[in-house]
Image 1: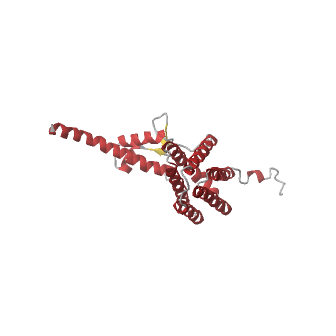
Image 2: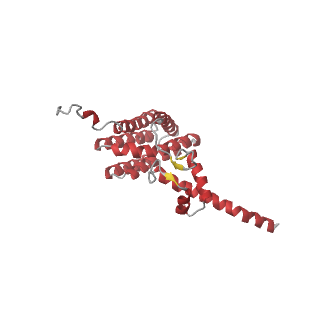
Image 3: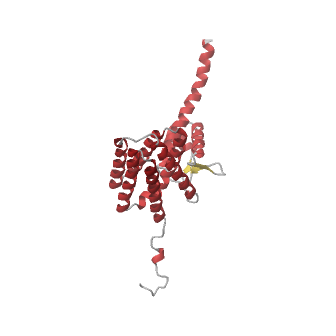
Length: 244
């Protein structure tokens, strides 16, 4: 009996190691893709990745499948894989979904009563400090941390799961289209709107929280839309003799 169990355990070990390897690659590559250390559209070479992460190609393939299921990786017809490009064609639908999930999350959290202000204020302070210092990643991580904390307070694992997935999906969009276009005035507004969310949570006010989180996301959307607008083309004179 001991011999059989020993053989079984020995057979299971490679499978367990492979699983840990795939999850390790998934987590590290996901983080690199999400934070734009690997740019959208970049080719993902399995051999190079296997060398980078010191694993065989099997865990790499498994990790890429997991990332494809989350929309971070795209498989092409020639059997190569790339980091999924960030397309704007479905961003309106995404933002609708994100706002709905955010409002639901805030209401669920407020339904459990006030949150101690000290638990949330530190996130806003870190967000403001990151914006002022131009440390975009620090600012965004603070914002993500704030909403993860609120998600824990909501005590609804289904709502939290889909909200956090949507929040993770928003990271690349904010890094590319929000933070690069934030002005000094925008920074103040962004902090004020995030603080309004915290104030509503501290008061346990679901209606105020709903309004605050909606306003915060819509403000970010306005900055993104402004950043996508033309810079100077509409001001160029078509008539070469027109110097006005």
